Image: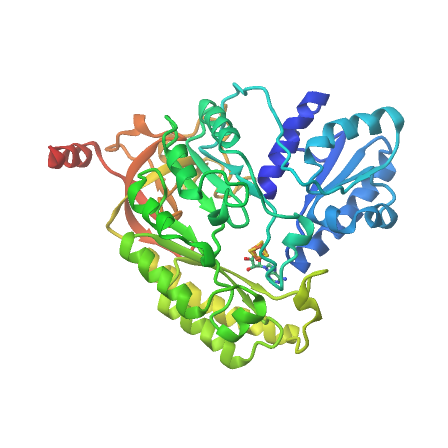
Amino acid sequence: MNVYDSEQIARSLESVGYRMTSSVKAADMILVNTCAIREKAEQKVFSFLGRLGDMKKVRPELIIAVGGCVAQQEGRKILERAPYIDLVFGTHAVSRVPEMIKRIESESCRIVDVEVSEIISEIEFPADDRKQEKSGTFVTIMQGCDNYCTYCVVPYVRGREMSRNPENIIREIRNLVATGVREITLLGQNVNSYGIKEELCSFPELLAQIAEIEGLLRIRFTTSHPKDLSENLMLAFKNLDKLCRHIHLPVQSGSNRILKKMNRKYTREQYLERIEKLRGICPDIAMTSDMIVGFPGETRADFEETLNLMKTVEYDGLFAFQYSDRPNAAAARFPEKISEKEKRERLLELLELQEYFTLKKNKAMIGSVQEILVDGMSKRGAGSRRQGTGSRGQGESVNENDVPNKNDVQWMGRTSGNKVVNFTQSDECDTDTLFVGKVIPVRIEEAFSHSLRGKPLTITELSGLKGDKT
Ligand code: 5AD
Ligand code: SF4
């Protein structure tokens, strides 16, 4: 979500003469977009701001702005704590950033804008005809959250849940597709409740409309709240070819006692029932989740229920976090806090179990042919002309002027289930068809815990496949 917001802000600042730079040292303005979801993220913000303060001593004309959830939460206190900051803007002030920057330039003033609005703010951009270098991007369809999970700061820093109009969403996606984007990830704290409050269309209806957009190849979305996972949404995975076979369905805990304290509004049994139903409708769907360990009062027995749930579901991947108190969130006031040591140990135990399932799932794909949307290319470590210089590692992008040897190039893309696949060109492959934004069939040959490696089908294999069909 923050990546999307940052991109929107960067684009809106073009109207007042700013362009993105990849060098912090060369920047005339540094804008820090912050996240307050967990304590660690917030601590990082303040240590980074400290370093910017040192830069401002050397270059007093540098404009420093802080936005996002930490800015919303701390407001004016940030200016008091860090007097070198020029602008603090909250999560509802994004569309006002360009005019505030202009004022700072002309009046050398300092501004705080953390006003919360009751209507969703749309930033209107002129149609963009620049070609995108990436195959996929994000589009926010709603903001805020009304769920008030007791550990979560989001309702306090992002405000009430509000959905964007379908027309605006569709227009934005059409514009993106015109610039070369092929995959869209729809963003919202709980996309399943899209449009309900405002009586717009339902989320599955929105998906169906987006799927009609010509040139768009793939649709993803995140995040779904298990309590609102409807049968119609489950059916969309079967009926809409463009909807990727992956769902991120955060469960947070496997213990009913803890789920209740978290105010998640579903039981372990209801969650498992929904997963079973979804797998009945779409058997090859990949599943990922979020998990919190060490929520106040979580006993060893509760934690073991979480491990047990993981064994029942066998997730393709999992994001796991140690619980941390967040300002305003109800659980900050709950007794029976778990020690940092215990939380760390539980996290490691959980991650070790997940590693086993991730690898198991990945290995099960060996030998299969997967449709891969090509994301980009990177230079292979081994065999690279620059090997040993230490100047470039695996995964770094290749400069367009530095045309690499064909066999040095490693491509990267994702399966419909969102698994990263690396592959190289080979002489027998139809290499003309390989480029960013294209979907190609790749046979999976090796599996690791965070990625897969494969080979694009050869021309002979491809014609065999086509022959099979006719
Ligand atoms: N402590 C730890 N993890 C948290 N998350 C949200 N709030 C907290 C917190 N206070 C996690 C949840 C959520 C993900 C985005 O961050 O798992 O799904
Ligand atoms: Fe936070 Fe719960 Fe809303 Fe997700 S659904 S953003 S965890 S309050």
